[in-house]
Image 1 (cartoon, rainbow, N blue to C red):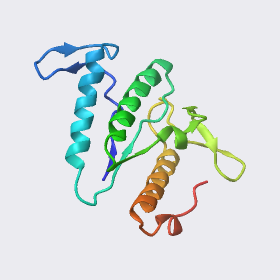
Image 2: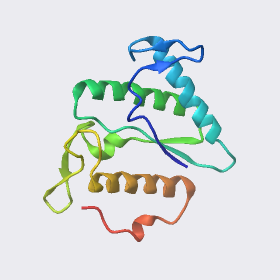
Image 3: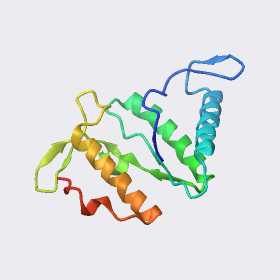
Image 4: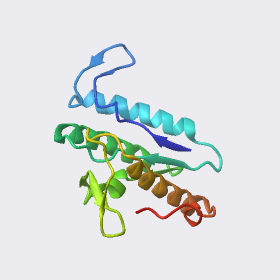
Length: 155
């Protein structure tokens, strides 16, 4: 199971008692979001099931990127307590030293667009890079034949 969540989650949240929390800076927000992430991770647990949780990539807007960092920390913290969850760090694949990058080396000496102009969404090339990383993790963790042998090389 590959899980990719969170791009629209950096906003207000409603607690189980109906209380709205408008700001992510409120400690109750992180607690509630962590509870929800943990619940999903726990629901995905099954014998011999590999769960690959993909973090969000760095974002072009610094304020949005700071909110995404908070979400990614929650993902990592909850996954650390669940050995059936493997985290794939999107920043390692789509970032430049962990920072936002809209262009990355393509392997032939050029650069390719990996992000759309909005600084949020991935181009096809960016999505292909991330998918290739997920497939590599699945192969390594599940002992499957690598799809890398049958898919075209990236860039």
